[in-house]
Image 1 (cartoon, rainbow, N blue to C red):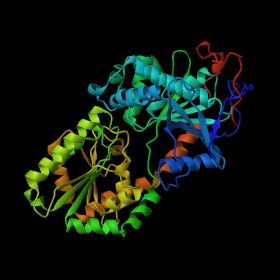
Image 2: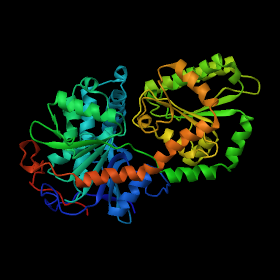
Image 3: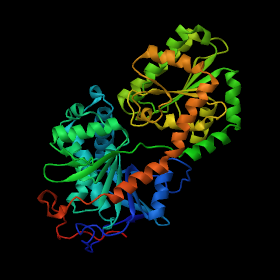
Image 4: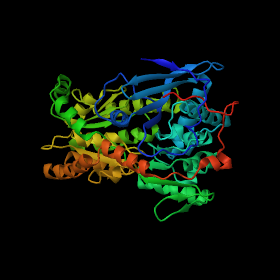
Length: 506
C-alpha cells in the first residue's frame, strides 16, 4: 500500500500542547532517510528500529528520496506494515540542494569531524536547512498523537524538536547524534551556532556516542549558553528549561553478524579469495570514501611497513574496500584521485609478478560478503581521523573464528576505541606508529590474539544494538516533561489561519 496523505480541512487540537498521556505511547522514529519496508534485513540498526516500532506500534518518518519542482506542493506518502506506518515526504529540489548537499554535508559534517578548512557556510543554505526541518515538523504534526514518544536521528535534523515545540507539541522527544560532536571552541565558529546547537535544549534527551562528545556538549552549553550542569547530569538553562544528555554508544547485532560470518566461510567467493591470496595474510579496510576515514595515511603507513620490514613483502595483501559517497562534492572527487594514485605508486614500487600489495576496490558489498572477508582477514585496519563510533571495528571482531581470531588495529579517535580497549590503538596522524603496529599485528602470537579477541567479543555480546536501543528508549520514557511549553511566549503554537491544527492521520 502506497498512498499519499493529504492534509484534512477538519480541525484537531488535542495533539498539541495538551500535555503527555499516561502510559507508553507509540514510537515515532524520524531520520533523513527511511528504511525500505519491503526490504527484508537481518541485523543492524534498521532491523532493531523496525523491531522496536513493531513492538510499540508507530511511525518511521523521513525524506522519500524524491524531489518536486520549486513551487509545487511536496507530498506526504505512507506505507503500512502491520502496526507500523512508513511515512515519507518529498522535498523541493532547491531545498534538498541547500539542506542536504550543502549545509548538512559541507558545513555540519566537516565541522563535527574537526575539518574547519572544509566548512563552506552560506546563509541561504542554512535557510534551506531550517526550511526542510520546519517542513518536516509541519508534516509530522499531522501524524503525532499526544502520548507518542519521538526519536529523531542525526545532524540533518538538529532543529526539528524546536520546530515541533513551536507547533505546541509537548511529547517526549529524544535525539541521537551518530557523528562525533566538535568541541565548544570549534562549534562557536559556526555563525548561527547559538540558534542551531542551542536547539538541542528542546529535546528531553540527547544521546551521544562517547564521553568526549558529552563533554563537548556540556562545555558548549555551560560556557556559551550559560547553562548550569546539575548534580544528576542534566543541563539547566537560564530560562529554567532542563534537558538530559548522556552517552549511548551504538553497536551491532552481534549474534546476526556471527551467523553471517560462519555461513559465509563456505561460500565460493570466500574460497576464491583464499585461493587468490596463495597463503598470504590478508589485511582489510572497509570505509566509505570520505576524508574523515584517514585512507591516504593508511596507504602511506602500509608502504612504510613494507619499506621498514622487507621480510613482510610478498607475505601480506591489503584489501581496501571504499565505495564512493557524495560523488558530486569536489573534495570527495579529489580524494578518489589521491587514493588511486597512491595505490598505483605503492604497487608499482613493491609489487612482484605474482603479488600486488594493495587491492583497492571502489564498490560496495553486502553485509554477508563483508562478513566473509572479515573472517578471512588476519588484520583489520580501522584508522579514521575522527569517527562517531565506527561499526566496522565491531563487525570485524564479531566475525572472527574463536580458535584463530584476527587482530584489530583501531584509531584512538574512533568512538569504538573507548569500548574495544583490547584493540591495538594507534594515532592515525603518526604513520610510523601505524606501520609498526601493522607489523606487530601480523606477527602477534595466537595466545595474545585469542586473549584480546575474547575481551572485545564479551563486550559486544553484552552490548549489542538491541541493548543500545533499549537503554535509550528506557531513559527517554522515564524523562520528565520540561514544564508546559504552551505557556512559554517563545513557543506559542504556530497555527494555521483558522487558529486550529489540521486533523492528524491516525
